[in-house]
Image (cartoon, rainbow, N blue to C red; front, side, top):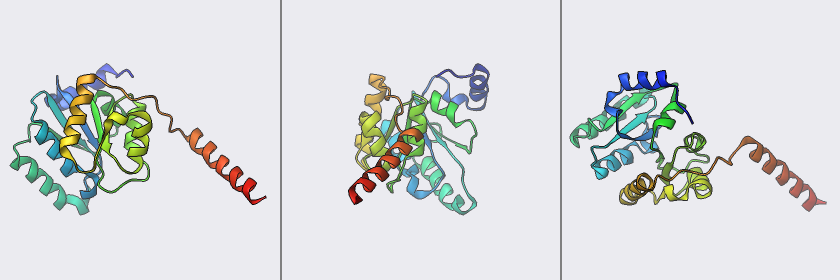
Length: 195
């Protein structure tokens, strides 16, 4: 997937701290159950100067206090030069494309990991917890991206393995056509069983 060169130049002007770094991205709204704490713990565990972490997503008015605790945690751990909070962006597809790994670290299992599928559709590896929709997607398309829930050590190992092996996910098979076909087939099966 090719990137527009002028977009990339503008990105590096806005975020020069990402130049020449491996980019680890957590696309999420800033809220406690979305795993921002786990992502910060991962960055601390990796302790690498050749990586930069991005948290891409909005902070609602009701989450300002939580956001401040997150910023305090980043400062306390001396990670402010390794993690950037970009706020809400309308160029997320390009951010996926420049990312070396995209994460879905929701603590509560989500029925469908939308950011997981979006990143994979851009050809970017995804790492996430072994539960919910992200587990289902990664089991099919990128099993090496799975780690046990809240296991930072395993997530660190998964991250390093992906980066060292230059692994890429299989093409996205979770399409709307597949969902429609599955739903129609289920109805046919139910009709046949009731006859």
